[in-house]
Length: 236
Image 1: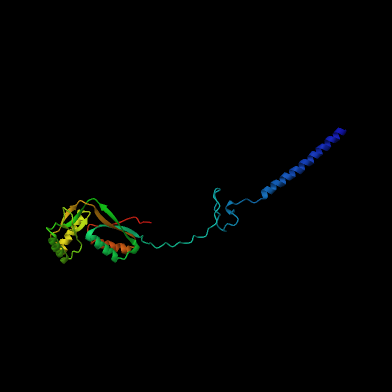
Image 2: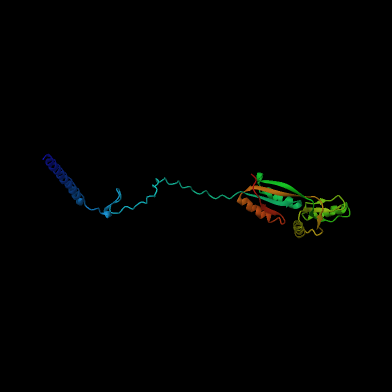
């Protein structure tokens, strides 16, 4: 009898537990069904402009760097012509005197210097040896009357009493000088010869010339056929 009572008591406990657990499940199901559906088109990021969908950012996109202040604009420097450095030469005899005078008129100051070169052989423009000293003096008087002031009387054999009018490194320079003597001075007895001796010539060096001075020098150079005017690296 007691066993039957305990069995009925246990059945009642299980029945009430099942009823309570089932009620909870039904309530949860109704709560789930009562939740309104989600609308994906209406989902937007917090802070995005209203009325426009927010653009999705890729997962690997780096964070935007803070905008830096605009760089200060630098105005281009005015173009400045580089200082020109040149060599002009080679000069000897009458051409050396003329070139020296032309450069002196340009008043270059410390921008002008010179260097000397020496060659074992050259060319000269000369009047052949005269028979005696009196003949030499007459020839010199004729040269001066024609405006020739640069000359040298040779006092050694085999050119004793010859009159040198200029010594040049190249035949072209000597020929140009002779042409000028004949055309402008009327000197007809002069000629060109090879001078087998040491020839000393001068080269002018010009540093830091501005554009106007370099242009002026190029114009003067045209009056000295046989000379060379060239650009060189400026000395530091």
